[in-house]
Image (tube, rainbow, N blue to C red):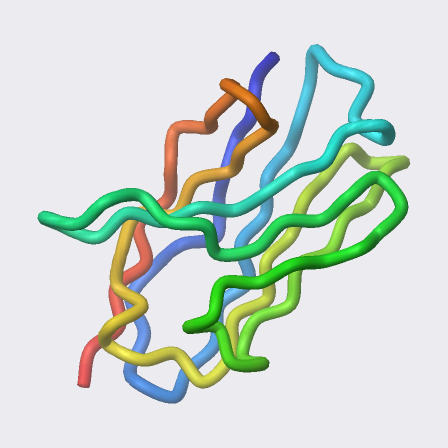
Length: 111
């Protein structure tokens, strides 16, 4: 399984970013997929997950600001992030439970 995340960058508070994750080596359409993040000195935490049928779950801190989606034809996972806050600064990881992780993409939000 290979997961390639992209789309991170540096933005000011209130800005937006769209993360993408390309997946290979798995039957993408049948897998639940997820985004996690890890900030310096903190544990990795769930940002959002989406089932094979499109049911999404979000971390409490998201508060309607992020949207997870998937394209089963292109085998891509997405995370649309709006109203970004400095507290969202972290490395964001694409994840296929239970143990497949992408390399991470850095998101930095400045105040």
